[in-house]
Image (tube, rainbow, N blue to C red):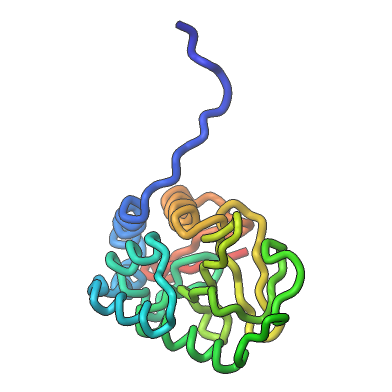
Amino acid sequence: MSVPTGRIRRMTSSIPESWTRIETWLANNAPRTFAELAPPAERATIARAEEAIGLAFPPSLTESLLRHDGTADGVLLPPFWMMLSTRHIVDAWTSRTDIHGPERPDAETGDPEREYGPWWHRQWIPFATNGAGDHLVVDQRPTRQRGRIGAADHEVGCHFKTHPMWTSLPQLLDMTATAIETGGLLDCYERVVIDERELTWEF
């Protein structure tokens, strides 16, 4: 039987697999960033957070938090994103929602799957921050692109980029792990280690 020729698409690593790859590389090459990885969150803590915001976390985010409850001040995701703890997810969601105010029936117009979204939506779950008021969010609106990643800027609103890394959290962690391991470019960014201890990303 002949074997089909052509490019074979690599399967996306699971959340635990991606974390194992990231942890291994950081421990050997960027120990300061490795030390910023928090211990696992408890399931009860995650359940309380879900109750606080009135949304169930997507399974991928729960898996990630059960591995590491954030990355403290350590930049992990390109180009400058630090992953939030469970408590800070609730804080960020609550702050954004309070600023945005009560949603009206006409608060969102147009296609919810478009590249640019509103300033905020209650069905977005923040999971990373740049420390300047901006967040990465998982879009939990019931659309065909449910689970995609958006960058919610505190001034101009949310942008859903088209690069494959932003398709989902599993894809984002998998492609980050690959870029960290290989030193290859990821959406124009390259991993760099400062003083042989700390991970950062350069354009």
